[in-house]
Image (cartoon, rainbow, N blue to C red):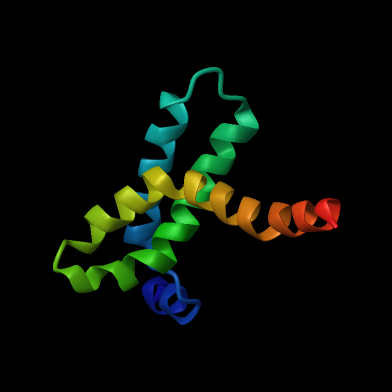
Length: 96
């Protein structure tokens, strides 16, 4: 019953746990990481793994491996996306 509920919400628990694991390993490999950095790494790893791993699954690699790798690199991916979205328009305005 709980699997039906989570799948109805678009959540795959196995992928989320694999992404959390990747994010946790990444967080503890960072030097002087604060508790917010660790939490952000773990949560973003799990969320991104849930939604990106099925897309990457088309390459023939097991989905849990993709989920772990996305979880490991999730914080860096989020950081770069936010920089691209929020910082570039500010740079253009300053140069005008």
